Image 1 (tube, rainbow, N blue to C red):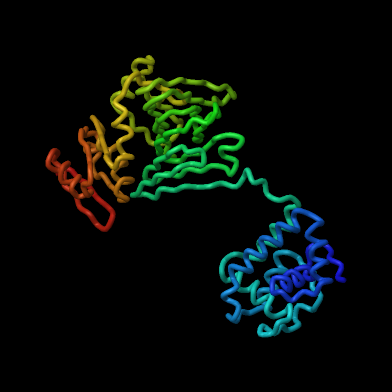
Image 2: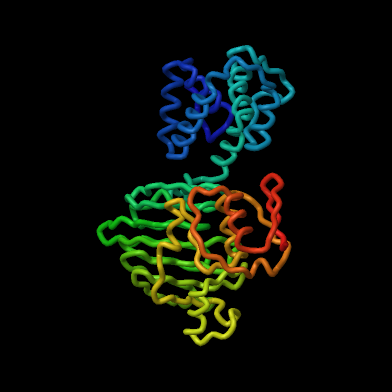
Length: 374
């Protein structure tokens, strides 16, 4: 019976023989003993089996098995029983042939058996499952809707990404957001729900709210529709400042970096907090007493609503909404204010409406729109 030492070429040869149903009873027993030695051994075999099954239809394709062998040894330092310059018959059933046909096939498919072995040898412990993330992405120009494992319903706006751990809804409920999302959070026996952004954390139970946290923008905006929530801001000194919101309230955290687009309501919040300049508000959370939440949440119903909004701010929303790039050639145009609602219109329809109201002209080349003053 073969003595199976830590991972080497002999073990791989034997495991491949098992996958091909070519093992003797003694060899099968040796494999069983090896699998029982550690969880890592069992995990490695399971992964190898998955890859083997995935590449089975490509059995007859001829690859350079010798090159594949060199790649595996280069990445894993697996000791060789044969000189590396010894030939391998890719058409034979030997270890040097069909096994490395498989490995070469895996390289070609991008699964990287060499990296798999390197990963296995380098890490003595199986990766913590808590680090396995699920990511949901809404590309520019599109929106998506998902249900999280706890029943929470989430709408993702254009250019946004939501991620959560495999332990979500087991030990805790925590998601990380980049971009904009509307949450309708399901209640779960008092288990808190956290939305993390690089600047603030939002803590809730069962409630509905909107969060906008695009990396390039100079603010993180939270609008509460129903229920209650707490906005947590961590200061540089490690202190945690908490702001509680009631329905129809809106919290705006002013970041230290990024382009800042403030609505008239938020500018009034600056004044009510006795802040004269935007620079003085950086690192602070401003709370608007009451807002029309439909303005900030209508996007999930495929409506773009804007009230007394500058064209500079509106153009950013249009870029995400339609997946275009807008270049404003005149700074004066950026300061124009607009009111309106966009439903099912094309970007050209919107530009025509703007052109009707203001002295501008525009040109479209592919997905780039240039706007100039008439």
